[in-house]
View (spheres, rainbow, N blue to C red):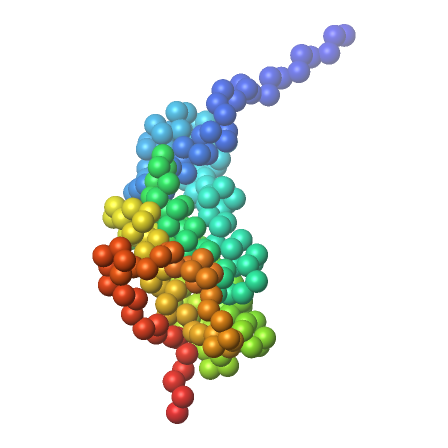
Length: 242
């Protein structure tokens, strides 16, 4: 007796999954998690709802995959800068300079998806907001760990407030993202980054030599010569002596 014909396993996928994921990323990045509907996603991704659910699961599962892909493709520069540079100051300075570039690149949404995608959510999306909040806290924690290591090594003064300094950096990065979404260009964000680094505590060996402008996260040249005001005296996030 002839064996029964094997059942067809389903229609082959007629779209490129990675391209569809990139298009979904754009929608969430531009509009935020809650404001992006399934119909928005299917229109942007160029697929029907059944294909979306079959390939990615529900909206939340798709968003989680988008956030992971965003971290790999666009969002890892802060972690790399802090991990690769020899000091926390140099790592943060590099991260802020790179943020000025990354948040204003043409051809893609402005700012940072992890910062802006769940700013205003209802209780129904509380888990999404909490997940992104934890990612931001993790970044701040990594910066704080580098700062504490520099305190131990003597690179930073012993009275440096590591937690406050790390949260300050987080606030600057989040502010730069929102400024980019509001229309600030790369040059403006670079100026913000340079000014922000002036709050960094003086290094233990500051009196023995000056850092370069690049190490400090500052633009080259004399601002006064360009028509700007001279640099203000640097404020530091260290505890004042009693």
